[in-house]
Length: 374
Image (cartoon, rainbow, N blue to C red; front, top):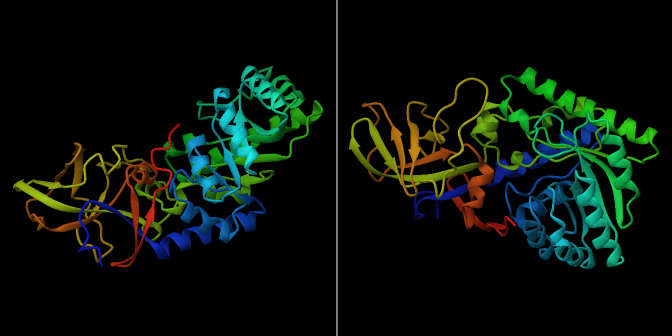
């Protein structure tokens, strides 16, 4: 079977590129002397997680407990959830710990940490936690400039039933960087903040074992993030149009494609593909300079030449509406390859990933944690 024989739309993953991306990031981590703990929300697949672990990853990250449960059921035992898990889920956490999973979560609120302490001590268990620090994304995390930040860390450290491992950050604002120089500054500021908070905590008598950082756009700067002990990129396993735009990869590193078919060309300036919002993410394109459209279109499956003049302007559930030039040769029945803007969301929309070597289908990988968003 090949890319011309399967019903469209479907998500294709180039095996050689995935394996190359995994090996390359593992080497980046090794050379920098840090542990690599990939975020599995990008692929949501135990099979691909095992490829990462076999290459040298120390464990994985999961976005939610339900994801962690899927990977734990598949035999993966070192899992970090860098998300503020609600203590109402304490029973599920206890089940994972009882099953032998080395589980850690993040906290950024003393009262929530107290609830976790009560839930763990009541069961005679201990849960590893890291304090999340806001390094500029302004989503979750303690404010490093707050006069109460160190007291909060010390209080969490002293709670029974919890084992404070260290500090964790996510420089998510790196996705809005306007240049490679700005990305480097964000990475530098991230580790500077963590080092400062760690120093304050240690001065207050708190042992800080780990400084965990994570984001694919800033991963290339890990050699400069002195003091970091762990990196947690996720998107690198596939990459996407956003990472291409941010200079995190080249076109040859992009392993994910959506294969779609032209189903209509009602006027010379408009082409309709069969991959709508149920297949392609509606996320806007990001990157240095101006990027437009819901994916980068390659009008020939067998070549690596994108056609920027084919712009997917809007998506409905089953339709991708693209603006084209009158001399565009695409006709109903033609197949195209689309590099999506955001690979992680595309994975969550698919039941399976079609593994390919070039044009040849070699396997199908189940997206085991699809929809496990709770």
